[in-house]
Length: 81
Length: 233
Length: 226
Image (tube, rainbow over all chains, first blue to last red; front, side):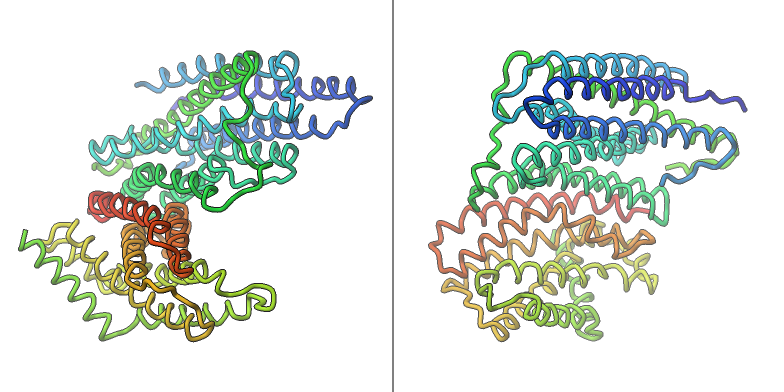
């Protein structure tokens, strides 16, 4: 039985990972500019909040992808975790 | 709807959503003005509020599809309710992690009993119960019905829970620091950024929702293919 | 209608009779109630906090946990004996079964409330205020709402392999209004505040109870249907 690979998931994963990776140097860059005047702490809070958001989303998509692959590879895929 | 069609929708919504997220990132990190009193940390707002909105949306979809499932007994409604509930769990977690991070810096305390934050926490636990019941039900069909009942009852009682937590601070005075009226009054650029955030999150939610729905669809097809007929309702 | 009421009454009578004969649930609930009060005595440093200040909160927590312990077994005995099949296939409508279970649970929880009030009065000399009638009214309305939600979820948790472990996760998020307004109202009654300060909470408790009872009556059939 031929089933599709969850490509839309991969597209999303790749794009979100890219956006996550791109935001890291941005935050750091903005951070260093103002390092003279103020603490970096709020930037870290913002960065962690955004990173956690995307990590949670990616985790969700990975888990869906894994379950789909499990189904394709002949698992029963009966129960969710 | 065929599996290919669902997948196509997931892709289109996903591409749009990711584009929205990229724009949102650019706006948040380079364009939008810094809020005067709370400073940089207020930028969490643009991920916090959209995730809260999606959590409520997901809760609504779960309740509506659950009620419709109890009535019509169409498996697809159960797939949709379940997919939305899973989204609610994920976006609720985003809301519940970004909120305390913001609060920890802006107000010096990670958790405030701010009514909407409290409500989301309680709603999140209703979602947790939804999945625990599904997973531990001795009979799968009963599990679906009971999960739907939880969704519906949750939606009926949540407004009352909301009223309770809203009025709770008025019964017990709170420090003024924690008094969060509607967030800061929004400037134009902040409003635009927020709107983009809401749009992007909603698109992402529906994209992954379709993906998750497709998974249930695959399970169903697989069950038919392996001649393990899903019990008729 | 009268047939319906008689059927409901018959189940209530059967449940209460069973309870009187075995005393199973009532004994466990009563013991828990008293023991929780004993533990609170040791858990709270009475040199730092006046117990009376916490009275309403302590009593409500005791009622919640004691009530949950007993109500979790609402359908347990019948399931173990297989009697649930007989009950479900009997001519009594499913919502009638739910209402009957709500009534018998209500009686049970009311009894442990009396135990709790007596125990706390005995152990800590709590002052319950002047308006005992209003107190009974608030407790009655709040208990009905509590029982309406918990009975429905007891039917749900009985059909899972997690059993009663699941019950608190399911009911506590939804019982927040009962706790908030129940504690507020009883706390003010204990402090002998004027009725006007209690009314608002009482109306909201009543609204919660009406919604919970209506929803439970409608939704119960989907939980137990075969």
